Image (cartoon, rainbow, N blue to C red; front, side, top):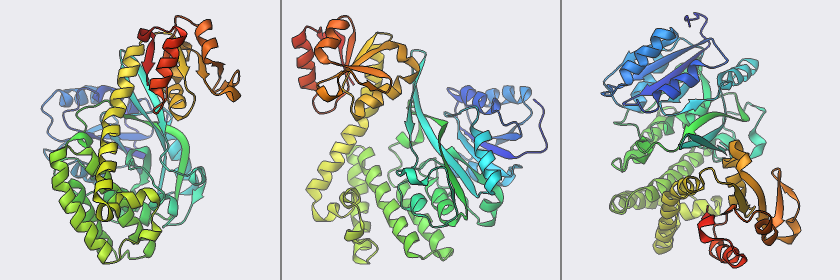
Length: 441
């Protein structure tokens, strides 16, 4: 495809030894329904076949430009891309992720309609097993009220204090807005957490934005080499928040909304960083965590009454009840480590078998969403709640447990319940279900 000089969007693709998934990534952006784009690939000194893959795609699509830069910093790549971009808007695509075909078209429609500083959407997390791809939706914001409406407030509660996920790749950003406000990434070594200050400043300084409820981006969760899984960068998150604080001071952003959001984001991030670290690294980080938290509480930056219960546990409890705090950390660490492993193991075990899903609560609905592209494998649902028997849930009939076994005696029963799975398994075995035909999700 020939380069269209009327470029509306520049998509920045950050590359560093990305050969495993790079072709899927490039295919997704080159096949966008919106054609007036350029694809700016910034390669940070790859030593695998990534450079050859980029050149091969460039030969077939002149919209691809390649920048070779030995600096491996993710922030450095993005900053170079923003400077050299020729589009009115900037999109960001990591080399193991993918865009849905209509993503840029939908985002640009609203960007143009309202002359937005940025527009974003929800996304799907996905992973691949034995040739099958499984998706589940992630809502970027924790309240439905912020979706599908023009938002003009520069300091709105949804983007700064409403619990937005750190997914800068779900949207596009007006390049002139970024340049005018000198919004760029902190160029710390490596690729850890460098989007934090970027997204905070975008939220704080934007005069207009729009959040689509559609899922338009596909985020890969099965890349074991992702930088977010690198345990060597123990204090990278601290460096990022130090940099962001310097930016707020330099820009004189001292409103209560901004400062409250800063400390809320900081300690939510510190808590998350703590439970993802291995035990020895966790002890090192906790010393810094405790010192900074004590200082910020003493100086009045954090007020207990203004925090939710969960935020209180992530902050004050480290000082007031260290034992309970560490128990909370340990539980989150275990849940976080086991979550994807549990899902992966269950899907692998199920394979192409016919399924009866036992449980229709949060975990059961999560399973149904995961199998939305493979619904032909699901025979029915079952549950012990008599009020739900013979009703339709997400398009499937829910039967009493005994009836489901009598109707589908050879099915694999997937137990989708976190608390009662042991009793539910005993119940199935008591009905005559072979243990080999029982899978815990």
